[in-house]
Length: 168
Image (cartoon, rainbow, N blue to C red):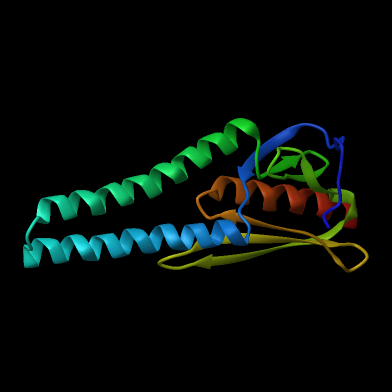
């Protein structure tokens, strides 16, 4: 069970980005699979020209628009409501849950390292950040879509500055 935090006093907010877990990765994989499969179907409809090709094409396009419309609506709602966000503060990192409350948080002073793992492919693209506690155990792990490049740069820069200053 995740630790519950009321409101961490981590100072000024630098930047925030959406966080995806396993369900988000599966949704990303499924959404891209639907797009690739739909493109193959559309090419097949153009080449084979079956009966009612216009209706079949409209159905395929409607499915793609519905899937991407749902993704857009979720991103909009998540951004407005603060759902599933990773927030970089001056003195720490906080992650919100599906209700917008803080699910997990860690202070920079408690961290030894931050490790970044990139995964980029045709169907998936994400960055995983692992926050290693000074005591040696994994304090927190965050999976962020790769579209948040500026967030990733800020997180690594802030981590290097804050953790490096403590080690000196």
